[in-house]
Length: 308
Image: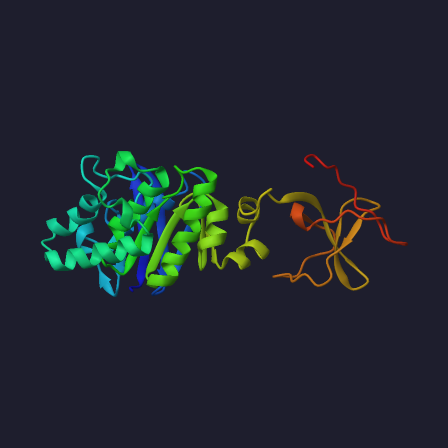
């Protein structure tokens, strides 16, 4: 296991700054998910950790060692790509052993590592097949196995399940989580799929425009998003946003939707005081709204149902 530390990272493509002054600390054995829309910088950040992307400023530390200018093979990482990137003319066993042979690992050690990885991923019956004879899920298991045999402390995943159908994605999500629990290795996982992030992560780094908007546990990000982007991006269906004004009613905070509608916010924490009548935006998750008969004396909340 190893820690990963990104310090004041800066990356630009031409004159366009993609990431600027970004820092991230990943604890030993932690599963971090980089989550965000396409173009937010998550894969760029992962590639810089792997040594596949040149950086313009900052430092990358892995396992307490400054690897900023080290080659990818010398960083102590294993990487799984979106494309399986398997050698089509080699067997599964050949794909697993190729990198180890290039690194001049002994034959006995190679056999030991391949047997261990094949056992964990349950691909022993596939070792003599070629990639063209495998399903998409089996190919991705082999791609993960190729990273496993490197016997490293940090594993990097770049949207490894995006080419699979929904059923396979669900199955492999479970396998990757079990893999992390079995190995206890540090893992950094890139995805735009919030279900993957909420299922797999110890902590999620939600990214937008090259900036980490929030870094917290899945439960914290879902229940207490720090800004409107995080609130709207995480959740399916997405959160509803309603404009109104903040008021105080009977000593408790409330949200004025209209002349007739006042919604109590008693019990909800506020980071800072607000002024009477201050404009605000109320976020409501669809799955947390319940339709029922109006209790006596209660004020109904007018809503228009767009999708049932």
